[in-house]
Image (cartoon, rainbow, N blue to C red):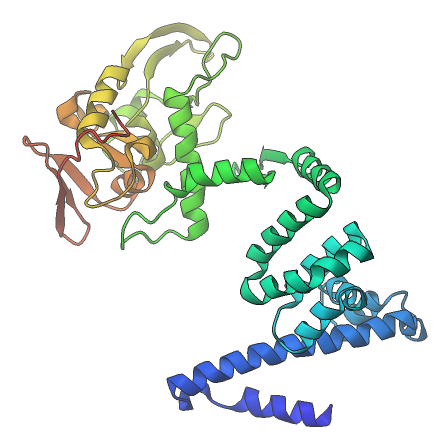
Length: 404
C-alpha cells in the first residue's frame, strides 16, 4: 500500500500543463483503468471485511456504517453500493475478472449482478459470457437496456412483473412554498418518460448563442411553454363549468403605467402572489382581459366584457405567417411561442396582425426584462434592437407542413 500511495502521490503532484496532448490523453485513460481496478480491489476487501463482521470490533454494526464512520465524508448510499459490489463479485466471476482488469465499470457489474439475482445461478451462468462481450462494448446505460432485453427473453414473467412495478411506481407532485416558488417531484415509467421527453426536447434547445440559460432552466421553460400551449389550444375538461385558466388581478394603474420603477405595481396572481412589472407585461401580451368593478369594500359589483385578446383566427393567421419565434434565427417552433404586442396594448397598441408576432418564452422574457426592443416592419420583417444597439432581423418562415 505504501508503494501504491507513492505512485498516487506522483500522479496528483504532477502539473498536467507540462504534458503534451497525446501524453495527457494517455494518462487520463490509464488513470481511468486504474480507478476501475482499484474499485474491484476495494470491493473484494470489503466483501471479506463484511463477511468477518470486522466492523463490530470498532463498535459499528455493518461494513457500510464502518466505511462512513472511518472516512468521515462518505455517504451511506455510496458506502452501501461499495459493500454491495463486494457481495456481488462472487456471483458474477467473469464480470468480476473484467472489472479487476479495468475493462468494464462497477456499474456494469451491478447491472448484471442484479439481473443474476433474479433469474437464478443457472440462467445467470449461461448468459454471463455473452453479456460480458456487450458490457465491454457499451456504456452502462446502453448495457442496462441489453440486460433488460435478455431478462425478457429468459424470464418473461419476471420481466412483466418489473414492468408493472415501474408503471405503478409513477408519481408526480407539485406544491407551492410560502415564497411562491413551485417545487415538484417526478417519477415516470419508461414509456411515459419517453413521451414527455420527446414533447419537451425540441422546446428545450438553446435559442441561439446569446441564450445564457442553464440546461435545467431551458427544460423548465419548455415545460411551462407546453402548459401554455395546452391552456391555449388543448381540450381541457371544465372545472365548475369554466375552462381552466391562470387569473391575474391588476388595477388601472398597472395597465397605464409608464415603466416608472418608483411606482411599484399591484398586479398579482389569483392566489395572491405578487408579480413584477416585467412579468405582468409579458403575461399581458397574450391574455384575455375583463373589467371587474369593486365597491369600497372590494366586493365585486360588475364583471365587464372581454376587452382585449388574440382571437383564435388572428392567432392562427400570425402563426401561419411567422412559423416560429421571430427573434433573429431562433429555432423555436410556433407551438412553443406566445403572441407579443410590438406596441404594448396598454400603450395604445392594437390587437392586429401588423402589431403581433410570435416569440418563444425566452425571447418574450428578453423583450420585457433585458432591454431588447422588437418591431414589425410593413413588409413583415421583424427588427430586433439589442441593448448594445446592434440590430438583427428575421423574415416570416411561412406555413410549415407541420402547421398546415
